[in-house]
Length: 316
Image 1 (cartoon, rainbow, N blue to C red):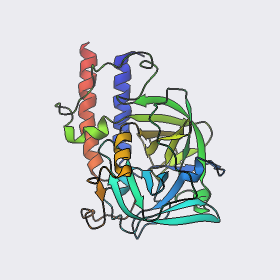
Image 2: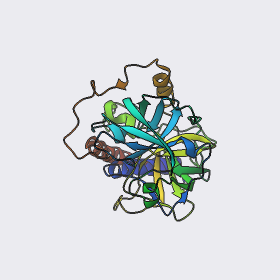
Image 3: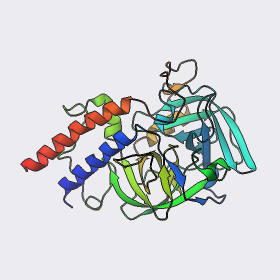
Image 4: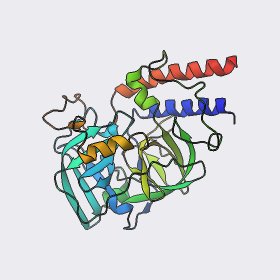
């Protein structure tokens, strides 16, 4: 596959993500139960707001008082009263959430816990981008999963299909320097700089190695690669119906947000912190992990990017 085709395919997958993100994503069905270990112990079930339920979204403990999840889980919702649950079955504990932060570099968010977790070693954030064929692990605490409702954490082994975005290597670019040709940039006619953070983020496309499949219900679950949390669940790539079970998944890489995560957790970035007192009024919609209408706009803008890319390929 030529670099021009890789660029076009990447843009196509990105557009699929934009549109499919407009619905709830990811409940692992037909998955195995995760055994307690260094990875699974860090995966938390999230209850969004006072009216939510555990399994609204999934997150990962990356510091004693910080959890990383998907931005669309927390944006345009009333997050006051949110909680996270650690552990499985009869060995669980709950922590309250008092503040959160939304990344400007993709579908990534942080939640701050009122009480530190001292009996679990937090996961390390990974920035190494996996290559096609590499193996990883995904977890999801969806309330749509019978296993998860029994407080058993679903897990599935996955294979990386391709990387999508400026920081993600593909079969064509692993050994070569990526070309900027045919790539949309912030501020051009195709995509305003304000929305480039999502469209230009790095994504990872994966497929389950077993019958385990993603279905509507949850987002924010971790993708572990080489023992580090390297991305979070964002969307199903299905063009037809993202609520149907799908063995494939699109992951938002944490590479683009790694510096921001470190700045927030270390206390150097206080401007990103949102509390119930400073949060904007949420949209008057049902409490859910489904994303907001803003992603519809981004999807429309992404169509313009695709049109521009296709036109350039046709001319050359």
